[in-house]
Image (spheres, rainbow, N blue to C red):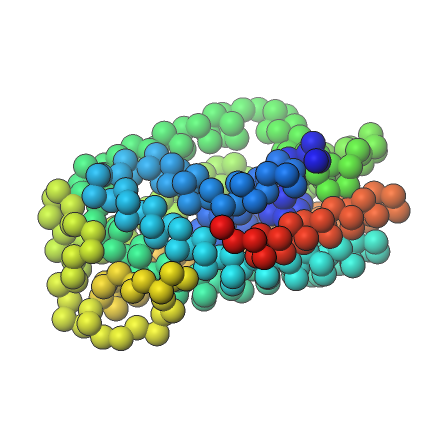
Length: 340
């Protein structure tokens, strides 16, 4: 059992530099958990629906009629993820393992993350109907709870990243970079740690702009909820889950695949599903031009930083990275082969 808190997802974070590209696809990562060694991988993955349920409950405070529905939909999503997404993880991990013994260009290193981002169409198809139904079920009290939770999380984030000195922020960035690098390469030398500090300094990270990104995505979420409530004519107390849409086009056939258990998708309107897709795309890519530019800058800088640091690793560290990548690929294969 490996003592490091490593996983396929943390490896992809390391290659992409501090995980910024993955924040662009945060909704894609619902089931990508930080795993604590090979002996517990299957347990954590198989229990992901419950873990994500608790996370969502913190934001919206589920009503009684939403609880069983949410757990069932999350289980469906995990089944879909197991069969359609884990194979992609396995392929990218094996690819990185073969590349890890040599130098890696920024384009190749970030290609593994980009390959997962490119699956966003499948995620949109899978999520649009259940998310539309769920968001249309929210009561005004739950929306208020969501707003309060957003502000609470923003204050916590600001305390960690914004309301600190430049020196403290740089040290925090460096510590996280060192932790991620050691997860993959093992123990680092003093000069490698210094290099990570310089890479963090050159990363283009801007805490106020990063907070602006957070707030923009939260506002997109609240905007989408309001639009969906208007489409469904949701009453103040919320809309019962499973109720038919008010839109007469709701009965039209959808091109979306059914969940893995073959249960029918929620009967939401095509208009509602389109609103959800628009919302998720705006979360991935900010609407505001300045924030979009910053988001792209961070992506490019992180790709370059990952490549530059990998060039500083020793042959022994690269062999260790290869072994860990191949082990993660085997973990993914075992999860595919041993579904509960």
